[in-house]
Length: 210
Image (tube, rainbow, N blue to C red):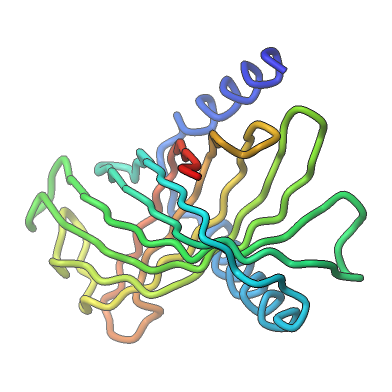
């Protein structure tokens, strides 16, 4: 188990060292997977167990070329899928409504160097239970509000944004502690132009309080 954690940590650190990314394929993938995951959860809504209070507190550190973000995450509920003919054996699925509060800092640019964001993102998580550890893939899509529409080198036009995310994580069998690598894309879906999207790559740590 210790070796597994060390290998996972090394992979996540290596991945997070890449500067974030104006990669249309990756951006489109995170948007699409978030929409598909939300649609899957809605289509399976009659098969969910009653949602339970399940407090999870997390912190993420992300970078985007010449800026970075520090994000606090709080999930008060877990809604677990009881059964599904669609999922492979050994894979579980749950939805965690998640609130995010972020502080952005830019290293340069003509606009303000600081920005704040709040978001509400329903995160759907597929998990593989592998003995002493759990590997998971999570996808989310939800509304976001930013304090300043012009930040660093970015002009975003509207305070309303949309936060899309996808991540890979590893946790202990009881999911007390989770280490994750996450990609977040924040833009206004071209509601108004210009729409300079943000793409953060980062590491996160989540602790289950229950």
